[in-house]
Image (cartoon, rainbow, N blue to C red):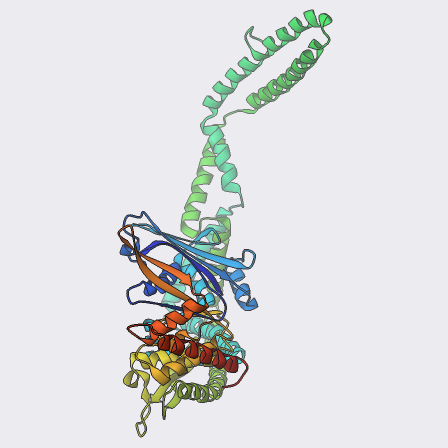
Length: 566
């Protein structure tokens, strides 16, 4: 669940910490108070578009931080696959905006927006006007059926995706079959040339690095020898001012006075140790100087070998592994072309077999989807009826595509009639924006038991509704909130009264500037807010009484809903 939202320097918000809870979280406030900023900030943090003018005037940056507490085992496993392990059960997503760029982090590690969006898809489902409109796209309908169907369809779909990948690969191989014998002969000659060139080069692992080191030494032998000789002279024993000579003299001087204080023997011992190290150093240096010879033939041979490695690497790959992999592909292609008739026959045979397997798998997938769609159709129709769609008719109609896809050959569409005597039609031809939001709510309530996403946000869910319909919507949201965390912005008292946790968004003028604040409501403040939503110009005792009655009825309704009664 989404435990908290921290917002700083965003639009009208100076700094705000929004604590959220399990169940139904309701956000209300006056028009213009900044309710949309809260949902907008969540969308921005999760990789949505971030307009530059969202940064608060006078601020250098804006910051949004979302703290998720995750309990679903499947979600945790999927996040671990993305190398996003939890920190003590939490996943913190942060996005910092400046005038020219944005930086996203997950648990403190910088990540790309694509990673944020992928993680967000596992954690939260935001339903605003755009998401409701997505119901107009038929591909969304198929996704809803698959989500409802669960593991059985999921397993078949995964097999279909895998087999479809093999099918498209074989199709590509079939398209690339060479019918022209002259072209095949030319390709065979070219492949043999490439294989021979790689084999003759016979590059060893680590050979280039070894040759680079040798070439560097040979190329700079004179400079190395001059400097090594100078070091040998400085550290040796031949010159009066060399380190070895000076150290020997120092040992002699200490020896002359050591009889006066036994502590001096310790200094003498230290210099003796240094003398031993200098002897070893000078001996090793002398051996190195002796080994440092320059052979013109060896130099040229090394240079030519490095040129060969560079040329082969540029043509066939940057490393020995890549070169060998390229050679292996050439050898495979050569074998296919040299045994072309058998290869072509095998491609055709495999393609035919894969097509038959794909047909069988798609048929199984279609049968399962139709079976699940029939159940889903009834459940959504019932849910729509409970959302005050009088005399609603809802159908899920399936058809077959004339081609394969990674998800099979199915094309399902949701159809609806909201008026008696009218034929069912596609949602886009019948439903208004407000009706689409209720249809989405009905679908979400049906999927509530199978959906792994723990948090749902509903914005504009109350568009164009009131009275009895609003009451039905509130009951449905409370039902979803029995198994999910639900966050909802509303202006309707019927929905607000169902809150398990109620926050108010207010706009205040502080030091001449508009500032949006968010705070949770206590019991009496909740009564007054429901009274305000009920619409009285003046909040009288009668209105307050109505608000208290509405809250009590909502509490009774929630208890029945969550105990299994409808």
